[in-house]
Image (cartoon, rainbow, N blue to C red):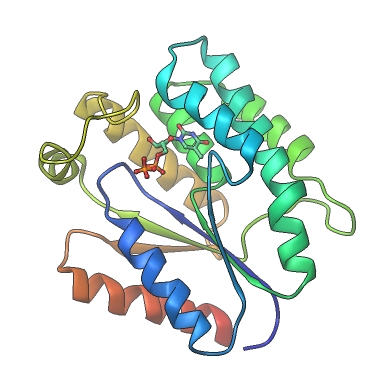
Length: 210
Ligand code: TYD
C-alpha cells in the first residue's frame, strides 16, 4: 500500500465506529503509513467552533446544513487535501454522507440543495469533486443503537433525537449508498466487536485490491 487514501466512517449515533477508527489508525501505521485521523464536523480550530454550534444550538435546517458544509470546506482545504497531497492515509470520522443522512434523511432537508452544496464545497484543484475513496458504513438498527446510547454520556442535540429520527438517518445512508454503491462498504454493526473489526479489515483489503 503506497498511495494516499481517504476513508470516511459513517453510521447513526451509537453504531460503535470510534473504537474501530482508532484500531485502523494503528493498523495502517504498523504497515508503514502516515495517518491523519480526523473528524467532522471539526478537524480545524474554526471547524471545531462550528461543531460546538451545530451540536448544541437549535437552528433553522438550512443554517444547520450550511454550518456542516462550511466546517467541511475548512477541514478539506486546511487538513484533508494537504494530507492527501503528502500521500497519507486520511481516516475521517464522518464526512459528507453524514450531512445527507442527518440533514437530508433525519431533518428532511432538500436532497438536491445538499447535492448543490456538495458540488460547491468539495470542488478542489485537480479533482472535480472530492469524495472518500472508501466509506465504511456501520449499519445498526436504531432500536439497538438506542439501547447502547441510553448508558452513554449526556446526549448532544442529535443523540437526544427519538428513534424515528434515526430510522430516517439510516434511510439517508441507504440512499447515499444506492447513489454510489462502489464507494460504500456496509457493515453489520450489531455483531460482536471482533466480528465487526474483521469485516472492517476485509472491506479495506477488498477496496485496496481493486
Ligand atoms: P459524532 O460523530 O457521533 O461524534 P461523538 O460521538 O464523538 O460525539 O457526533 C457528530 C454528530 O453530528 C452526530 O450526531 C452526527 C451529526 N452530524 C450531522 O448532523 N451532519 C453532519 O454533516 C455531520 C458531519 C455530523
